[in-house]
Amino acid sequence: MTHQVHLVDDDEAIRDALSWLLQSRGLTCQTYPSAESFLAGWTAEVGGCLLLDIRMGGMSGLELFERLLIRGNRLPVIFLTGHGDVPMAVSALKKGAFDFVEKPFDDNELVNRVLEAVQLDTYQRATAASCDSLNSRLERLTSRERQVMELILAGKFNKVIADELQISMRTVEVHRANLFEKMGVRTAVELSQLMSTRN
Image (cartoon, rainbow, N blue to C red; front, side):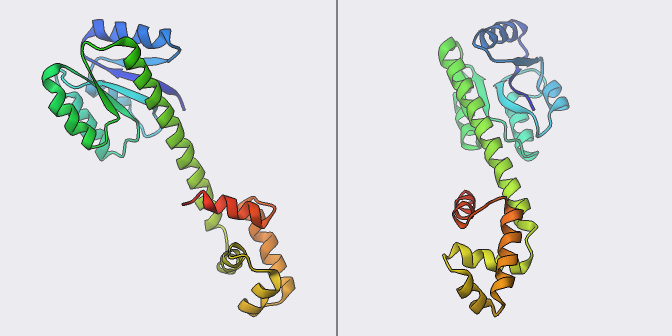
């Protein structure tokens, strides 16, 4: 998956200038002349940041943003706006846009916001992947292994777990070994730390 800036603007001069600016600060930049051309190639795996002109011929930046929201887009969106478009941009912020930058913009300020958006995207994707991985591990546990896990997390010893579940100590040890292997941990402390990331 690539973490790059996706720049959508129908003004070729702005696309060229911004692409050069972003690349001069070490960011890769893919440009699109229209909202339609970006939407045609968009998938949920597209990472980085979307830099989007709010007003364009054809589909506007705002329309593209709303269509992406419907499709479950998690890509941070920064709007490029003219002075008269600020109320529209504020409305987009309330719907989850990352930020808006008013034209004419300060180059450093714009690039700094883009870098923050890319970092946010990287963090959110890593968190989502970690959560997916944890959930898939939990799904592999049997109902008995889940019961044993809950009691381990409550700080109970094998003998107490055996008594509560009315099973032998040996059976508790087998369930404990199996669930540790499935969860990818070696100790009750590691299990507790892993489960705390779920909250």
